[in-house]
Amino acid sequence: MTNDRSLVIVPDMSNDRSYLAALQDYYAAHRALPSYSSIGALLGLRSKSSVAALVARFKLAGFVESTPDRRLAPTRQFFQRPLAEAPVHAGLPSPIDDGPADALTLDDYLIEHPSRTVLVRVKGDSMIDVGVLDGDLVVVEKRAGARRGEIVVAIVDNQFTLKRLDLERGRFILRPENKAFPVIRPEGALEIFGVMVGLVRKVA
Image 1: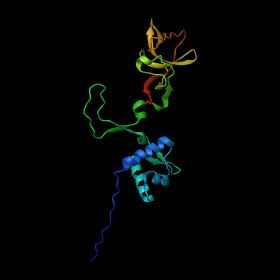
Image 2: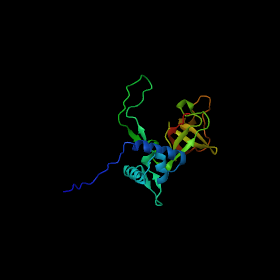
Image 3: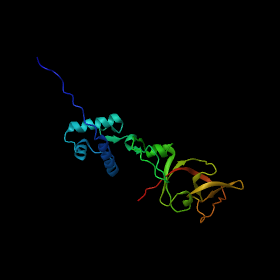
Image 4: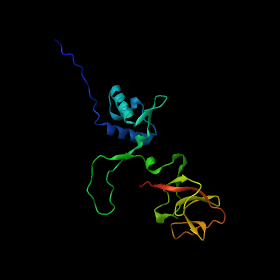
């Protein structure tokens, strides 16, 4: 009597997180995902079946997808970054919680209406008192109007400027957040390009 049992091989998925991190770094450097053969070389996977199984797991998890020409492409989930469960305190130290973290993408966090949102680079220091510095990228949602107190990108004398919208004697003005700069009082109609909804700064 023979023992006819099938051998079931369970894939080792313990390294998938580090594999995904390597692919994310590759994409950041090349703005494309590697081919199947290059994935093996990049991650140290020797067999084609191991690469195929890894890609299948990443597809199932929603990190990558296949394009019509059968290339691999990242999904929105591919760009998610871990979000620490506890906030960091700027005052006294707090205990470290090393538990599982949620994840989010910067687009999901900063951008509510993608079709109406642009990034605008700041030039100058007229808004430094609210933490908007020269070289920052402000996230601007394009709108035809704005409310008093909002930071707006306005068009004055055919030039763009970033200021806080305010009222003075019943007329809208553009107020800088730096006492070294004057208030802008448009003589004609004030045109609003959009409202600042976020800010991105790369720290060296």
